[in-house]
Image (cartoon, rainbow, N blue to C red; front, side):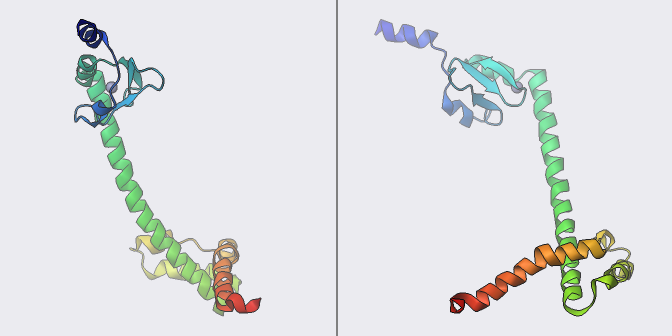
Length: 163
Ligand SMILES: [Zn+2]
């Protein structure tokens, strides 16, 4: 028994379960192969795998500042990415529709004029304002995006009967 209690008193071992604790969960991680150490992902610094040390690290000005910075950065990127993506997606869909129309009904040469016309239809529309369609891009959409899709449709239609 004394042996055990002695061991317990002096052991400095990283415990995986600490990561689940509220005070640590956002930043604590282990150092592979070094269970006497812990790592703060936020400050990018090595710490002793001592619960008391970790608790005091969590309350240092440096750590709290880093956490606040990381938190706000992560939040803003997420929001801007989200907004960007929806505009981008709507714009891409619009561009594809125009390109598909061109491929089916007109000559690619008309796309320069059509692109300008579409943009002028609604000056307030974020999607139309961002629309970029000129001959080269339209061609590449037709060749790289629309044709492979049409080809895939065709292949699906033909199916096994081809063989
Ligand atoms: Zn830290």
